[in-house]
Image (cartoon, rainbow, N blue to C red; front, side):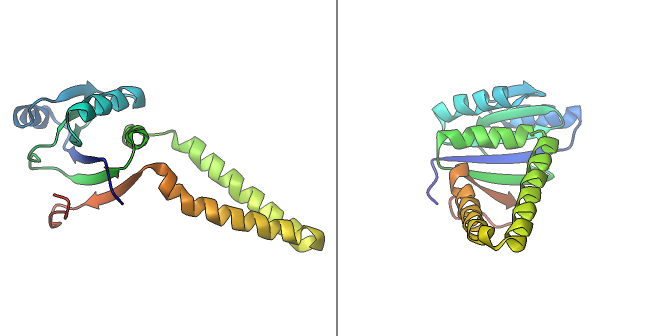
Length: 167
């Protein structure tokens, strides 16, 4: 997948010394305290205007967004997002800032329940069997396209991982 933007997301321990160390090591950063999705998205878009590669350093509820530089040591977990469209930056901000997972779980349970109900009716009434097979095929195609429509690719980064070929 060719990407237009590259976002490195690292989490650090939540203490004031870590935040001050991050402020010293990153240049040209935007500091956000407990951001929502919109403010994180706006900060990502502002940074994307100056650089195609960005770093997000998170320590507790403090986020520092900066153009890509040397990654400050001491991170506990990291992820790399390869974003192909500007809309993908919005999705990355949504994923980092967090979503209401309860609503997503409820929607998923509702969809699975409907599929099971349709499968039962397809088994019970043979006239609905063709419709059931068609819906199953449509569901498979949409799930395969879901990753492409998302607009970004997520890669987990480990502390001992070798450098990525795009670096």
